Amino acid sequence: MARPVTLFTGQWADLDFDTACERASSFGYDGIELACWGDHFEIDKALSDDGYIKTRWDTLDKHGLTAYSVSNHLVGQAICDNIDDRHKEILPADVWGDGDPEGVRQRAAQKMIDAAKACRLFIDARPEGEEFPAVVNGFTGSSIWHSLYAFPPTSQDYWNKGFEDFGGRFTPILDAFDEVNVNFGLEVHPTEIAFDIASSERAIDAVNGHIRFGFNYDPSHLGYQGVDYVKFIRVFVDRIYHVHMKDVWWGHGDGTVGVFGGHTDFTDPRRYWDFRSLGHGDIQFEDIIVALNDIGYNGPLSVEWEDGRMDREHGATEACEFVRKVDFPTSNIAFDAQFAE
Image 1: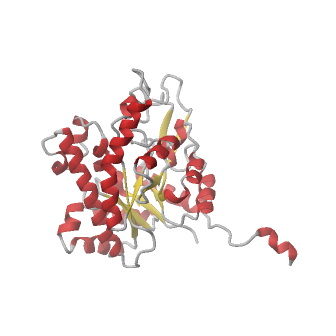
Image 2: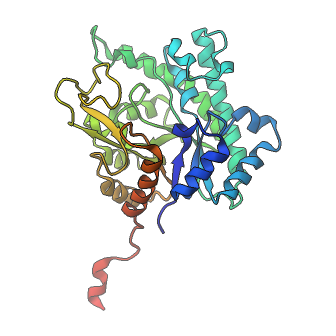
Image 3: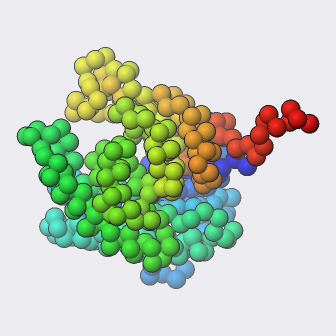
């Protein structure tokens, strides 16, 4: 049986929830991955208003949709980051508060814990029952991302302190996730504590292999770096908690902008890499599907649609069709066993 195809609503938060659901249904999706910004999934209301979660499911049902996860990327970014004015633009007012950096980080951590509790209530209310482990996808931020290039000269001790900071901040969060039986799926991504395979391994070690720490797998953040995005699946077999289908191309610029982006905007034709609608980039999705089948991942394939060169409704519709075409169920027989018949 093919996996359900969902649409991440993070790039559709300008639409109210009912409209976003109507559009997702019209594009052909089975469900949505609810973003915790805009009005799509409001954590505080989910915890304080007894009728709020029912309104989410009623709206989903009206449009023939389901859901398997919620995503809290923007708040997660502030948990370990070195806070500056840019964060104010992406954070709820109650998390930003007076802008004191440590206060922002602590409030962001509490909001992530609240997201786990809200996710549990949401999944428990799922009309079809729980078929897929509850997961909150998100970011972590990083206190050491600025030192990526290792100049001024940077020691392993310096980087270890960054991973220790992550472990100290996230272990209590993960313990809270465990209390309500919810997984955390880090979207491995530049600016996070983990942005490739090696840093992901160190992040796991930093939380002592906590069972609730895994990944929202997204190949688009790996391919252009030169990271083997299929190997990532095979390395972290038991920690692929959710999957984003998202494409990217690289090597398409004019040679004036490198992998670091040159302080250019997305879609600048000089760029070495850029996000593309599914099927228009360089990610080999069939290899990904084979690997997901090999590890037994049966959860949703969630389209995170980003392409500054394409109309988003056209792109989201086309992307849904692309995922359905590229996905296939694994075999339950040995093909050569029939030779003995």
